[in-house]
Amino acid sequence: MLRFLLTIFIWITFVGGVGVYMHLRDSGQASPALAEAAPEAARAVYDIELTPTFSAQADPFALRTTDDDTPAITVTLNGASIGAIPSDISPGQPWLRRAVPGVVQGANEIYVQAAPPVSAGGTRHAVRVRILRNGQPTAETTFWNDGGASVSGTLRFTAASDGDHS
Image (cartoon, rainbow, N blue to C red; front, top):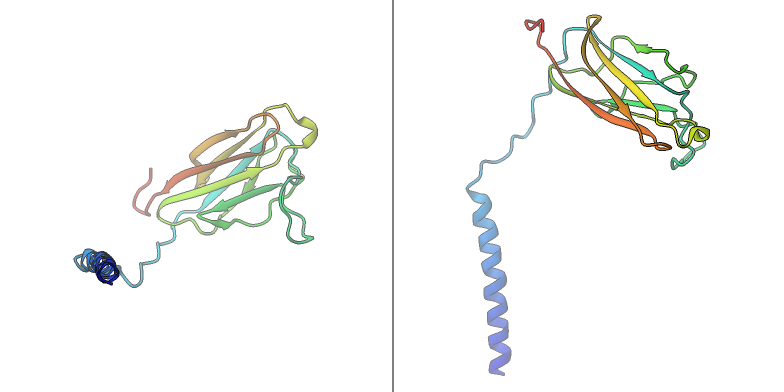
């Protein structure tokens, strides 16, 4: 009987000690802000220019949960889609999306994913991405794939405040 009571005492001491530690550990920290200030939209006009080296097709290996056609090229800005991108972009032809909504002052991130044709399995492909601020290039990069894989990548850029003309 004494062993049983000793076991219960040890467990209560151990679990209680961990509980007290966790309570005291968080009590010294400042509480998180209830609402963060929404980032301010950029005042300049930003455009996105895409130039694939292939004719994009819907990814045949993509998981489809509905009967809707999956886009051949997916572009998201800060986690939100920038809208429909035509699947008939010719190789080497730039496609321009003017006045992209959702660009905020400070850090921004663009994610691009495009599926090359399955018939061009071993060939390396690329998508060039340019960010234009008031018609002038601000950031650009080229995303390459390994032969047969989708072309994807993330471009981070900083949207200048209105007073900054760089």
